[in-house]
Image 1 (cartoon, rainbow over the protein chains, first blue to last red):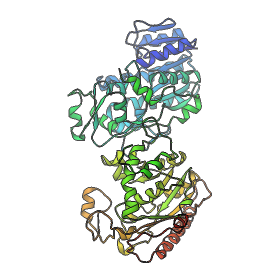
Image 2 (cartoon, rainbow over the protein chains, first blue to last red; image 1 turned 90 degrees about the vertical axis):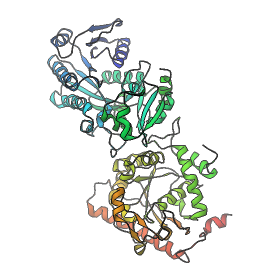
Image 3 (cartoon, each protein chain N blue to C red; image 1 turned 180 degrees about the horizontal axis):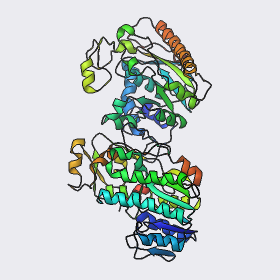
Image 4 (cartoon, one colour; image 1 turned 180 degrees about the vertical axis):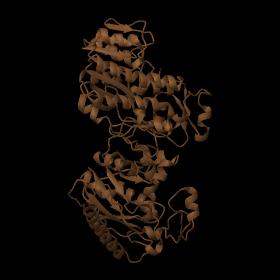
Length: 303
Length: 282
């Protein structure tokens, strides 16, 4: 299969590219960022997904499948730019898919789109609406992109679309949202709260995305590995010191005193859990995580 | 587990039909060590202070899903605690009762993680379903806070039942075990509710009892479990059918309550009610 990966220089995307080439697929990559030591068998185009040359890649190479991973989550990128990349980029790519006869599209989104509120249930299923945009402005563009990708299911029924809502991952690359939160030696918790965190090994996440393409998945799927663990246990098992900070002081300490930076609205994600039900994905693909929560966290200990 | 834990509690927590991960948590965030720690003083209160006797524990299945439907009384939740303790201290088949907590409890700091570690999730229908699908024992007080806040003059009168539990039982085809708690009203006879204080702390009510503190009187209590009731349906039945089923549950609870009230020699009883079965076995 000829597979196009957007945002290929990202940590997870590189792993997916390696996996696919090893299984005999032809991989084409698009990213603004360079990938200096791009492996053999991967054709790399250093272009912007919103610009003309990206469309040329579709026109010339005619890929069979698209894995869309070119979304920004860095909160340092300003809102307008994030909207342009996340929503504008997603829209463009799906239009190209339709225009150039791509058969399978996989959108890799995040489980945080469900939003963290005190009264929401554990184990979100795919039919629940993503509500994060309401309480967390910085996620609104990702929620919109997730819903737009899902709308391709009725917009272009001939295109097999899969929207993956991936839980947090940890791994040797030290990439990802949770790794960023655990990047310093001290991790800020909110006093009196200890939410469940669902995490999987980076390699299991890569395997799940690869499976979604190979099994030609169609629909919206939650992707998770082992059962969740409390955040305090995550800190303990990864060798970080959890510091409980009273809620009203929380925004003030972020980015200071050796704590990582987070936007103000992210406090809800440190107080309340987002736990997803991956039953539908497991049934559709037979996915089985290789690493337990303990192995994943302890493997991250020395990072 | 620490040496402070009660040996019977520790033994029975190890025998619970629940799967725990490497860190002693289940998939809902229930913590084995917290359960042992919290139930140890409860077991003490169960044996010595409230001198609880449990009847009909053979009606509670050793494993698999079930709903325990009980009357609520005594204002400050000791009845719930004693029902849960009676389930865990049942040496024949220890079970962990998991409750559906009030929203105001799971919104407040400290309470939320503590309740979660004990297996009590926010009272959402989704949570009830998830727990039952995971073959857990869910304890429901269909009277809700209205029942817990009954004044002493209305003691042992069941107030209006919610319908959620019956639809949940039908949807998950779980058996319903009616349960009556006797003695709760005497341990904490509520004379008055301070309404303004309740509004201030955002709780449902703040009761006042003659002892003036939030501690129950050492009145002997009894728990009665009735035979399991299985209802036919899938939870989509019209309201009048559901209401009819609920009346059946209500009747069996009323029977358990009146039998329990008749069985005790006087209402303010300070010595344990003997359990004929247990005495015989010894």
